[in-house]
Length: 159
Image (cartoon, rainbow, N blue to C red; front, side):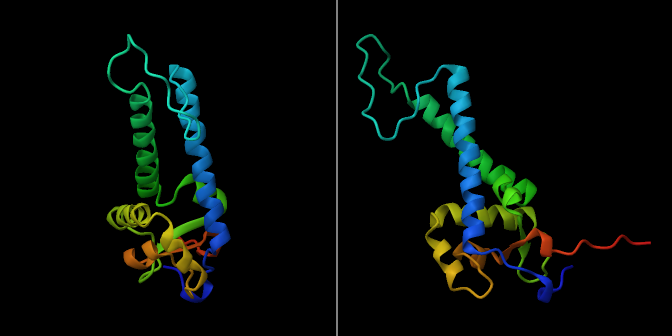
């Protein structure tokens, strides 16, 4: 268990960098899958594709869009829950601890934290700027802290 006086809380910029790292990973994976499977690109800024008279009545972008959603949810919920931090957090050098015991959170708490983060849609990130422990709204609600990985002491092995 870590001591609270040695913990360095991850600030707003560090956490935004972690989030951007995750976004870049997901966008690139979706792009590669689209290219490999020959799916049309998901263009949020362009006009919708013209309907083809001989095509089935379903939207041709529906299948790729659904797979993109599944991939994003799998990435966010799966990796964040199993690893207790996302690859973006790993890149940014931050990790998640419980606020009460300063230990690694369990799968349930991590899954709840991730779900709350998705539900608040980053609106709760503003609280990082005013919170003494730099907690976002979803961190406060789930009882977690995001800290610099380098400030978490490694437990010494038992003899």
